[in-house]
Amino acid sequence: MTVVIGLIAVVLFAVCPVSAVAQSPTNNSKALADGASEPVAPGTTINMQNWRQYQQFMPDGMAALFEGKYAWKMPNDVALEVGPTIIHPLPRNYLAATERYAGQVRLEELPGGGLTLRNYQGGAPFPNPQEPHKGWKILANLWYRYSPHLTVIPYADGCLVDHYGSINCNAAELVERQLAFNTDPGVPATIPGSEGKFVTQWLMVLEPEQLRYAANLYISYTDLSRPDDQFAFIPALRRYQPISTLARCSPTHETDATTEELREGFDSNLTQLKVDLLAEKKVLSLVDISTPQGRFPQNFDMPLGWPTPSWGKWQLRDVYVISASKLPAYASGYCYGKRVLYVDKQFSAPVWEDLYDMQMQPWKFMGLFLKTCNVPQIGPVNSCGGLVWSYWDVKNTHATFFVDPNAAHPIYTNEDAPKEYYDLVRFTTAPGLNQIMR
Image 1 (cartoon, rainbow, N blue to C red):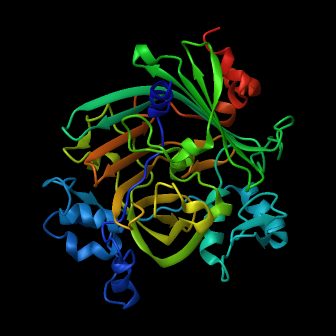
Image 2 (image 1 turned 60 degrees about the horizontal axis):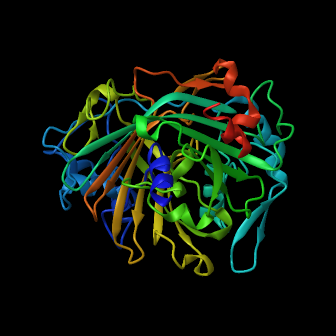
């Protein structure tokens, strides 16, 4: 049964990288802080010959891939073509909710040192995060960042590269829905009957045939302290069953992902985390991508699986660099010693992550390469569920690549989604999983 559940989850779940500079994730920030370098000019191409000149603008994990200190390293022909920084304004209704409600949001300290929010109703809870607890406030903005009420990806790829270089690919159908704190036009702030749910994530395996119809449902709640619920549909049994919350940290079978990286890179319990602000800096990020044509490894720069110039131009983005680790009361048995997130200041989503093991040594590097969606009645949105997630496990020489979706398949948001995806019972409840194969 465990193997079956692992295979279900294998199909399409989030990714995370780790920092290459083990004890010093802020090393690359120092040059900027000292005023030693100017920003990278549009038109610049960064390659193996000149990368050190721009190292201070890279996440630590990316710099480690250039340095070649692990088995995973940059290809000799790597080329990061830098373009202008493009800012897509946040949706008008989300900004209005921020202005209306942010002033009433309060932090509350919990026993054991954790934090939670009170009086949050929508928008960004901390539009100008300040001390105390600035790092945690930045992470709360990430948690409540704007994303469409409904995102549907009918066909998404997940490809796994093992220690020997063998490639295994799967495909799945994905549906993500926000059920509370909505700000999209025509969508209720709270969906009737949502029973305290915040976000649901549903996926069903399409390929390979022997795993077809295996499915997972993940539910996050408006109460930050309430653990997520997870359910799996087992085709052989033709029914769903709950998955223990202790399994959130377990690597899914043959992948480098855990459910702690759902929702485009982060899906952990905020009330259990200590969060530190490490730096504010400019970082090279790949946003506004054209997703690659074909299935991995087509249009990836191999053997690393790095984005090729056909994906788009890199942008120099303003980011917060924060470090999140479990508070001592919750650290026992957890997978990561810390997670370093590079959070875009403008749209509050992670654009890169470095993951460390419990000995604080680099474990995984995760590149989050974002596709911009044109959301109905809103316009272009950076954080919409469309992206390529790339995990490089530098301890075990594994890699995992999720393409949500590739260029041959659509991504739907809000009212553009086909009507069958509006079924709340089917896509947001555990009993709805039992409708599969009927």
